[in-house]
Image (cartoon, rainbow, N blue to C red; front, side, top):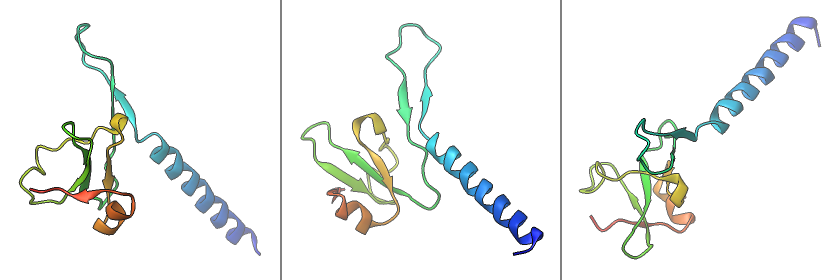
Amino acid sequence: MNRTSAYNIAVGVASVILVMMIVSTAFILIQANSPNTSPPILVALQRPGCVIKGNISINNGTRYYHLPRMEDYDRTVISPQYGEQWFCTEEEAISKGWEKAPK
């Protein structure tokens, strides 16, 4: 292996490590300025291309996934502190125990 190849590999590895560090900090704390607000909440950073919202019903604890263009999609908020998450495919959501939302 020549010096250029070794350098390119090192740069590639460093790039992957940097991306992993950025992804690992995808959950960030957000707190409103008002001192009377509730504790900070975690906000899940949506993975690129992953538009399926995994939401847990506050009424019955059922894990529903919402597809774009479904009735409740736009008002569904993902709160990872409650176990909610983004999915890239329906198969991924189903394999993790989530079911399609009724509307």
